[in-house]
Amino acid sequence: MNEIDRHLAAIAAQMDLDVETEHEILDEVRDHLETAAEQARAEGLDEAQALARAAAHFGPDEEVGRALQAAHAGWGTADAVVAAALPVICALVLRWLAFAPDGTALGWPQLLARPSFWIVALAALLVPLLRFERWRYALAAWVFFWALTVLFVTLPAQRW
Amino acid sequence: MGIREQMRKGTTTVILLNLLAEMERPMYGYEIIQELEARSQGYFQFKEGLIYPRLHELERQGLLRAEWRGEEGSRRRKFYTITEAGCHRLERELQGWRSFTRHVDDLLGVERPS
Image 1 (cartoon, rainbow over the protein chains, first blue to last red):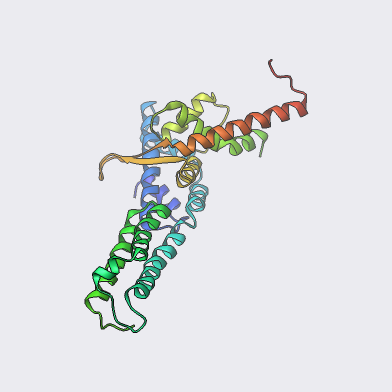
Image 2: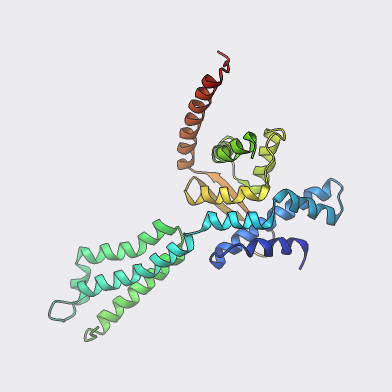
């Protein structure tokens, strides 16, 4: 492990975020430290001095790590809760839409003719995009939603 | 914490937004810090790492847009650009700052150039 990796590990130790976010943050910090060290070497410092100066100017790893955690805190949790809840809510609404009170399932033509069906479908796609700006959650919600749709339609005798 | 440090902390948002608005091009973190230190002629000393949490907050608020450039596996760099919402926020912040400094000047009896 080189000097920069040690700083990154110390910063990472202060964070408890999703893997992708942490990866991006540490990539950005690595770029900063490498660029600062390059600048210092260009000014005549040796490798060790350059890294030491870059790290000193960057600030204490623990303080920076805590500040980064605070800047992103709540993001992962809120994402997870909404991302988990949204497909479930959509599925429950879909079940209400797809089944008549006597338990018989609607066919595709009747289902697709219902505006409320399209509202639910759009919500499943658009709400995550607006909330997270993260397409993976939107895609996951969308796939889950449509998988349940197919399940309802192809297995009309299914009872929950 | 001295007044200089307090004021710097309280004005970081408007300083970052203003810089990116003036530069009119995407900038990466290290470049932003270097430019700010050059502009302040060393008056403000930044703990460089603490700029990133603020940049990320502004990005999350939609005031900055971030974009990664470079290939995976080689040097990748994150560039920031001010958004339309960031420009509006900057305008409000600058108005607030001018009003604040004018009133503080009045309280302190500082004469302003006419």
